[in-house]
Length: 265
Length: 221
Ligand code: HEM
Ligand code: FES
Image (cartoon, rainbow over all chains, first blue to last red):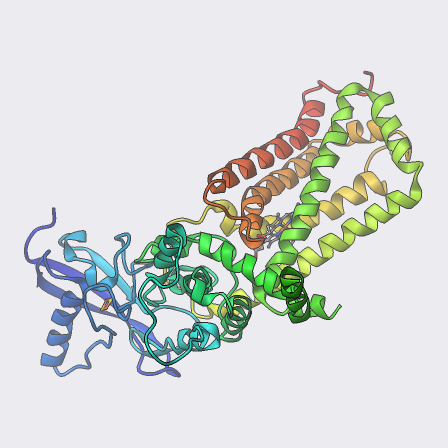
């Protein structure tokens, strides 16, 4: 059990802008309580920096309760730090003990340029969603709840995939900076539901293509993303994305319509 | 053809090519190992087997060219993906901490190239006869025994096949993911089958140089 009032040495990545060279800057903080969250510990550091007239460390955060996905940083080589199924904001200082040294880096991926210090631009994720992460619906009056029957195992699986908060830890943890887990989760959570069927194959084709255009790496099945994911999303979704992608490429539009026509004949 | 062109555009598609070529190469490797087990049945058996293969030159060369194309496709895709992956993480972490990946998964880009060198050496030595010992086109048995009696040559084969084993241990499970072979009921068998297959191939292949080094298999037998 870590004690009250810890003293820690922090090596924090500082980078003034996307084009600037970054470097590690070392700071000491004291009076850190084990009940503080990791971000509260950084708040202490920033107060200290501001009081001494220095530039505060920029880091992204919003909900501070593990649901918005904005607070990602790599702590001692691990995305979101050492605790499984936990975002950085939900990581608590009881994980550390007096005298520890902590290295803090931003997500490192060419598709996630550093904006400042620990803040990266994750717009690449938005563009992957724009490429196919939607379903087309008839507008007008709201449909009745439970109008469409969904088998429980599909509903459960879709919910597991939909737990993705888009934080980018999968990219950060992947040795190839691949966003396969993110893309696969988004492909699956719509592709598993009846409402997602009409666009199922075009969705996967477009999202996989956009993923590559953004400059993310390829999946070599290390499994690091699954270990780092604060929501525990399974790499089985990546296999499913690959399977759907293959279908989308092997069944051309004409053979798809031919098949459907045969089914209805 | 248009569809073949289209399918190679994405990383996922290149991984599918790697998985299919890897699977076919694995099939060859298993067959090759089983055929070589005839070494233990003595010179007549394995030399007879070699003569049988060489009696069908058309088929033999078709298989050789096919295998060569598989290796080339596999290596070309690996090279393209390796380049893209390096670009995707242009700034490295100070010290990344691995939580789930394995030694095998992290060394695919070492075990692969080691395999490539090993394959070239192996072909030069036993197929084309660039050997520092007596070599005959028909007496396969003696070629193998004379070769493995030299510790350096035996060592190269052992290292090459250890690389193959490590490559297959990750590759066989990885190809299931790449091809989308995933089902909750069977997923736990994927690593088991990959481990077993990699072990069988590696132990089988490594047993040949070791048997010769230990004097279990000799010229006189
Ligand atoms: C007997 C020869 C070989 C066999 C049986 C074999 C088999 C395999 C298999 C089954 C995979 C998994 C594919 C996937 O993840 O979908 C793989 C991946 C790989 N192979 Fe090979 N391979 C062989 C030779 C080579 C050679 C000569 C190289 C040389 C560069 C190589 C480089 C790689 C690399 C780098 C990967 C990882 C690809 C990735 O994960 O993106 N392999 N191999
Ligand atoms: S700040 Fe919202 S998930 Fe951490």
